[in-house]
Image 1: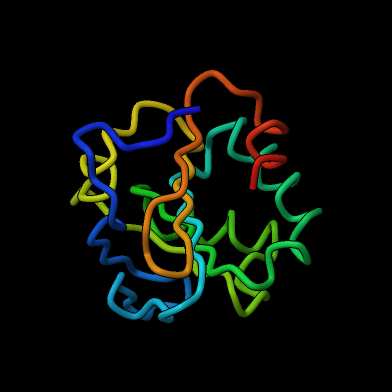
Image 2 (image 1 turned 120 degrees about the vertical axis):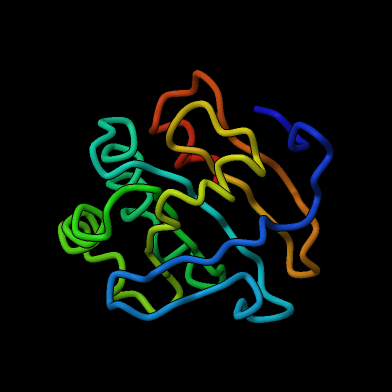
Length: 142
């Protein structure tokens, strides 16, 4: 686990994504005074699938957090992932693709999936979870 992003970025990435329902969504639309969990994933990544299953078992524990799940993959693949895990059926979860802009991926220097950044209600980075952890361990740290 790493506590600060490489390069020292302590505020959330300036993301701009297309949600699986077709709407646009940006970091500026996040609710103020509410914690944010940003998850960068790939719909074809086995670790991401296991992580998402484990996370969804704890979804009630996360209901006071804003969960933003971002991929770079095609929106159709992201929508299939969203549908499989019923992510968007939860009001506090947004799922989408940043396409090939790679803004989020570059901002955090993401090398492995899933990548998780947690922010407190003031918008300050609490922790980054990445590296060689098993998906179950990552979900348990949320």
